[in-house]
Structure formats: C-alpha cells, structure tokens
Length: 548
Image (cartoon, rainbow, N blue to C red; front, side, top):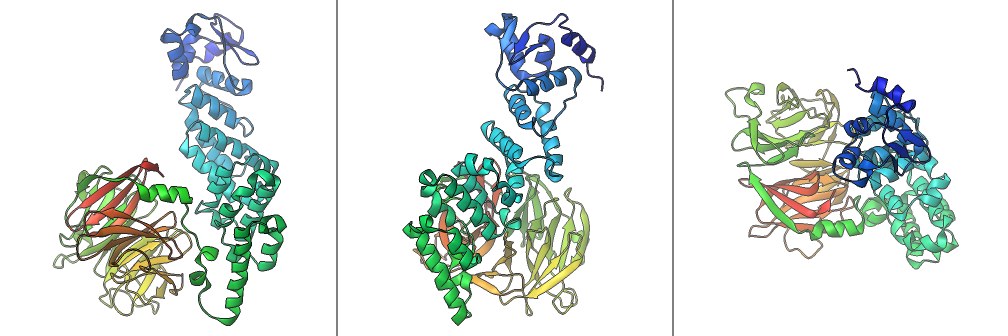
C-alpha cells in the first residue's frame, strides 16, 4: 500500500508549508493534517477547540528521538525501532494514541524476547511503561522475560535499586517462574534485594521468604543466606528451625515431607494473601445461566465454552456470554448403534477439543470439526478399546500433553501428545473421574469420595480433607488455576460451595453457590468469572471487585 504522505515528509524536513512546529528538546516541523490522520491525540487537539490549534509552536513532553520516529511513521508508515528506544516509543505512542504503532512495538518485542536481543534493564523499562499505560499484553511478556532470566537480572543494579516491593512479590507469585530458576537462586535474588536497602525493606522479609519453598534449599546455604540480620526477625528464624526439623524427620521417617511441612515445599497459590482475601470475599454475583443437563465444562482459547451433557449424549458449544452455537458431532466417531455417553471435555492452547466417550477419546478442531478418535493405553500397553474400558477424566498438563483417566480396575492415567500418540501411563489407586493438572507436574484427582494429589508416577502426595469449619465433604469436579485447587463440594441438603485448597492440601477458603455443582472452571478475562455446572444448567458467577 502506498503511504499518502511520503513525499510530504521531505517537504516537512525542509520546513516547507508546515504548521505547527512541535517542541521537545528539538523543534519538529509538521503538518496538522498528517498529525490528525496518524494520531487520535493530535486529531482531538486540532479539531476540538483547544488553544494549541492556533499556536505556531507546541511544547510536548517525552523523548525527542522517540517522537522523531513517530513523526516519520506518520508520514511514511515506517518506523525504526531499537531495544534502547522501544520503551520511549511505547510510552509516547500509547499517550499520543498512534494506534498503529503500538502493535508494531509488540511484534518487535516478541522477536527481541525470543532471540534475547533486549537488555534486561530495557525490558524492565518496558514493564514500567506498560504498567503506567495499562498495557496488559506488554506487561505479561515483559514479566515472563524477566522471570525467565531472573538469576541474571537479580545481579543488575536496576533490580537491586529500582525494583519495587510490588514487582518482587509479583515475581515470586508467578507460577511459570519455577521452570527457569531453582529455589536457592530465587532466595539469593530476594535476599540481595532486601539487603540493598535493609532498613526500609526489612518489613518485607517474612512475607517474601514465605513465598519461597525453603525446604528445597540446602540447609547450609539457607543459613548462609539468611544471615544475622534476617534471623533477628523471629518469624524468619522459625523458618530455619522448621527446615532443620524437617531434615531431622527425613533421617528417621519415610513420611512425605511435603505433607508434614507443606509451606516449605509447595505453593499456597500464586496470589498474595491480600488477593486471596479479595477473591474469596467477593461479592460473587450470579450473572447468567445457560445449558441443560450438564456434567463437565471447558473454556476454549477464543472464549467459547464446551459443556458436556452425559444424559443428553451431547457436547454443546456456547459463546463466552452463554449463547448456544452448535453441538459437536459425537456420533461420527462412535458406533451409530451405541450411545456416545460423553463424560469429560478439555481444550488445549491451540483450541483442539478432546472428549471422553466410553473407551475412546474423540478429537475436534478449534472450528468444531471431527478429527478422529483414539484409545488410552495401560502401563502394560493394553488399549482401552480391548478392555472395553470406561474413560472419564481429562486434563492438559503444563507441557500441553493430554492426560486421560481410566476408572475401572486396573485404574490408570494415560499421557498423549496432541495428535493422540501415546507417551506413557501410570497406575493410580483412586478412580480418575475428574482431573486437573498443576504447574508442578502433579495431578489433582476426584472420585466423588476423595480428592488426592498424585505425582508423575502416581504416588499420592496429599489427600484433601475437611479439617475446617465445614461439616460436609462430598467432592465432585475439580479444576486448578494459579496453583489453587477448586473443588465442587455439596452436601445432601442445601449447602453448596466451591472449596479451595493450596497444592499442599491447605484449605484456603470457599465460595458459596446456590445449587449442587458437578464441575467448575475459571474464566480469566476482565473481571474474574467462575463457571459452575449444576444438575440442569451452567451458572456464571462474577466477582466484579477482582481482576485476574
């Protein structure tokens, strides 16, 4: 496409017929028509009666180098970016509403992050600019990039001197951080930040250290890092004593340490305590209801909602607002003389939909087109088809692989690639009727009586229990978001709730619901929305005071 003002840009640089001139540190001649066409900000300035419309020179704030690039873009449609200037360009483009430039900045940064072309201090500047201008996509990618390179970033003066307590806490509660750094490296980064300005930062020591799984740090290194200043805080000294007690138990008992000392080994959920309080406090308001005879539910990347109805032999697809769109064609993948009897549904990051029906897993594209069916495999390489097995629970693990649960003896979980090819299987001692995966390669399983967390070889790590102020425990569907486990819990009367636990089985709180529930999931968009499946409908609850 030909850019309409390319030749005019040459005239601008010769100061030919320009009005006004824009002043930062340098003087930039420009044409009003061009500025109005490129920027909503300047369009409003020159067409809405502001005094700048009649001025020959206008003072603006920002970087001269960045503004010169924006001005060249207005005339030519081309912008020159580099990693040193990118944060200034984002700031000025966002403020002055050069709306076509912001997506170009995003594309540039994606390449810079992937190929590590951007310096960590520059990435931190991008994060600060994105936070100031409320650009969540830029924030997300900058945080991930900095978390991925935490060890290196923690050694820079920018991290030690300029990182705010809010930023450090946000790093500690990111669920994907553990993929890139060991607990000892995280502890070293936090201690270095605290000691940089100990007098003013010591009040954060207990809070931040409790977000680190200290049980995974060698004791000698832990004592060295948590020096006399830190141990002078009683709560911090108690943490070291707990680790010592834990290690002593390890020498004398085979008891699972993460069960005895959950806060030393597993996450409390990747939210701050204040965020958890706000999440549970609500208010949770029922926004709408849709669907009929529902059993399980999943949310697609595009916001569509897949709802399983076992009794109606269907999987209905709904919009994010609850409007019915279509049904998946289940009979195309099944014997026409046999009812499909769908049980569970899950969706991967590419929008591929998986449904368990009898002894098969049916697969559909993101456009709801049937792709084929395949079977689960036992640890002894027997197919679920040959065993006439009942497949129930489905979930996607953190590596994008599909986990399928077989509920009749022998019970097992079968792991598959996106195309259905088998990877491995593990035996379990609980019927995997409902399943959810966590960011620590563990699996949450519910069988209507118990909810257990198992590791990658099927060993039970935790059993969720009701050691709390609730007199009933009747669990159904489970899901996991931000390392918080959500359990549908209903008694035989009129008391129903979504009970929430940490990955170490610690009870965190509950959300009251008005109907008996069988499935639950979180929609992390705009306000926090909770989808709850009841006996004959899907209920959508929204917490308008809490944003994910």
